[in-house]
Structure formats: C-alpha cells, structure tokens
Image 1: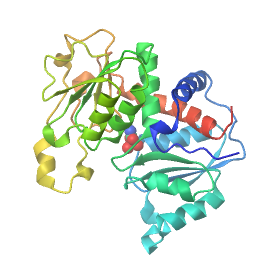
Image 2: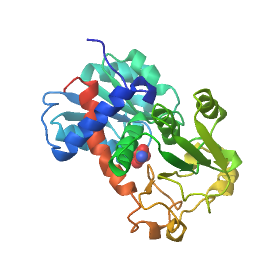
Image 3: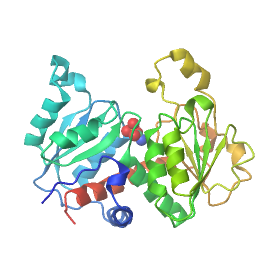
Length: 303
Ligand code: CP
C-alpha cells in the first residue's frame, strides 16, 4: 500500500475533511481505542510546541501506541551536524509514523520524500499547519453546525501565520465562504492567497481596524504576532500590540459567534474575554486530541 502523508491541507480532499470530522466526533465520544497497539510513533519537534505535541502524544496514548522522539533538537545529533535527511532516514527505520515540526518552510515535504513511513506536518515555518486546520474545522462544524457559508474574520499576523494560510485553503472548498482580513500592511495576507481566492471567485475584504465591522462574523480567528518570525526586533515592536480583542467589543456580535485562536496567545485576546461564552479557544485546543486521533487513524488506514 502506498504511504499517505499529510504535509499540506490540500493533500486531503473535501470528502476526507468530512470523514475526519466524523471520525473526530466518534473519538470525542469514545477516546480510548486500541487501534495503534503495537505501533511506534516518532514526534520530532525541532521548534517549540505545547498543544500540538502534547495533543498528538495524548492522541497516540489514547490509541494505544508507543511514542519516541525529541522535544528539542538540541538533545539530538542535529547538534553534531547531522542533517535533516539523515535524521529522517534513521527515524523512519524505528517508527511506523513520524510527526514533525520544523522552522523551515518545505522541510516536511522534503522529509516525506526521504521517509519510508508516513509524515504528518506539525508546522513548517510560515508555510502550513494542516492538523491545526482540521481541528479548527472540527471546532467550526461543532459550533456552527456547518462548514458552508462561513463568514470568518482573520486577525493579526496573516503574513507569517501558517494556521490562517492552511485554514483559508480548506474553507475555500466549501460553499460561499467570506473572508475578512484584519492586519497591518506589514502583516497582510500574502498576495498568493488573495490571488487564489480571486481565481475561485471567493469574496475577501481587507481592513485595518476591526471596531464596528465584526457584527456579521460567524468566526473571529485571532492570531499572535510571532516574534520568532521577525529578523528586526524594531519591526516586531511596531506591530506586536496592533490588535487586542476586549470583551466590550463583542456586544454587537452574533449570539452564535465563536472566537478561535490556535494559541499560544500573548496579549491579543484580553483575559476578560475568557469568561464570555463566545470564547472557544481552550475547547478548540481540546478538540485537537480527537481530531489528531482521527488524522492518525486515517493516515495509517486503521479505520
Ligand atoms: N497551536 C499550536 O500550534 O500551538 P503550539 O505551538 O503550542 O503547538
């Protein structure tokens, strides 16, 4: 059987997205299933992570699999000069599946070309974060009851934000999405994504402010301005606090609105939002476990 990787969200079809949503629902009802018994999964995190790594490891444990790997490449032979090529070649002899996060864009695709076993991209630089997108979609379908006709406001770092890039591509296969991009010019959604939406006849709007324009939002997707992507600290200081969502700003919004954030947040969502029923980001992170159980099961052909 040909191995299946998940590198870009476009590696899966719309039918597969929907299948994963259904499977995630099943895992949420019944999380402990021994489908991975006897299998070893390597989690290779060349870049820091809390949610992605721990929810993957929880998913693997709940599926009855075993975990090897590293949380910091400084404890691996990368520090001795071992290349990504050789690291992947070695680890694919030890594990049945590799989950990898790496700061370089394209690194996950490269790893998939070397590895004998499937690779799941857990984030490659500013490029893609497809498993985050699948849990975002699961969060949207759970709270809105649909993936069609979603009016989404993406806020913050839309230039380097891999989560918004992947989510935009995924929602574009559903009926009639509307995208609203709220970012300073330095962090605007890259032209390639806007051209992609135009080519598909999908509406998008760009804004500098979000006061007074969020009343029609089904989803507000907040993002962190990512310090680690800036080469010039002065440029980071200029934009770091550009948008802060506060509870009082949610008064004129739809009752069904949900606020998502891939997390971690720094200060772009004030803590006074946390107790508002429209705040969904912590449950969204919990949804990551069920969705990642579904992704692993799908990739490994377990169900
Ligand atoms: N959402 C997300 O990728 O979080 P971590 O960086 O903590 O994994």
